[in-house]
Length: 223
Length: 221
Image (cartoon, rainbow over all chains, first blue to last red; front, side, top):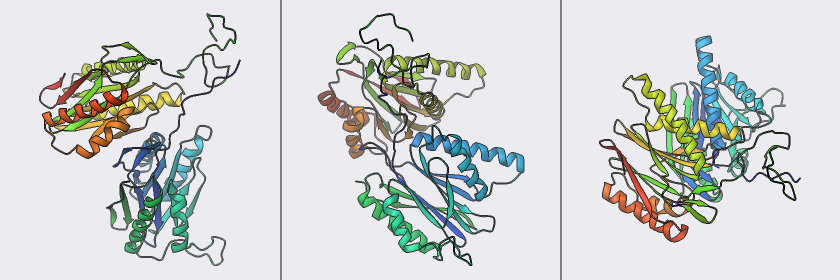
């Protein structure tokens, strides 16, 4: 008896790119707002960015239903944390929680490619980058999603992070000012939109700093 | 494994995860409905779907209602497997019943129903036994219009106009070009008719029904 092959997949790739850049006292998180399936666009105005805590913002691309479930899960855990500890979760704590949550489903993964951005307990910008099953690393900048292969090399060129093995330890965060970083993000997405069919429509940027959270939007090519 | 017929190759009922699982899962749909198209207009939502249910290439049922009103505020349209749609209606009946039984003056709006449906579809997908439907959920509550879609694996979103199946390829471009805020009822109907005409030519639609929902009258056909 031949085993029947499945003719549906529990996964779909809804596309999109996410970027995060850490600065000395700010963090920029950005993602496009296009949601696609196959060669069709489902909607042009879907936000991939989710504010998990006062100082943690996550951007995720991949399979949208898994991303939504993951965001709900983390938001619920954060609420419980607040009830138990009477304070907001710090960004490094949220980073660990996200990693554990992803690994929990190691054998039926969340098809979500995440970057977590925020301010650590000293007020410095921090960015954590993940794969689909939870391995993560704190870095100075990162890109995930369908446009990541186009964006990451450019960020490497502009923001070259020193090796974490160097002594004395050098800061991973970029010396760029907040406005310069936002400008860099806009440039990077405009370029990715040109060549990646899943990236485009509109860019949503979230800037986290000591004063709070700010949103900016920029139109991208719609083709 | 239940086999009531003896076949040469003895393939048995189809199973997704190995021969040891004792129950069956949906592998492909049998009786299906085609596209649903919906848009927001000035006073609410307009939704259109044809009334046919096909069994492969045969048009088996010719007056199936693929759109149903849910509670006081919402309209649900479904494409895909009709039996799964009927099961979803049973789930929603129970949901609305319990909501009414609270008797607290509050009623589930389209956003809430959409959220419920998303969770149901996603959870079934997690168990590898999906409800083979693409759902369109629209409604008006307290003057707020809402229009959303859920796919069979749980992908969901909200937009000013949605379409399932072939409608995504044929009707969405027309809607993207010609939809605008504050469409009047007549203009909305004309726009939907235009979309359905394209589907008639290219997707062998037959006759269709139109449903609308607005803040004053509630669901009406």
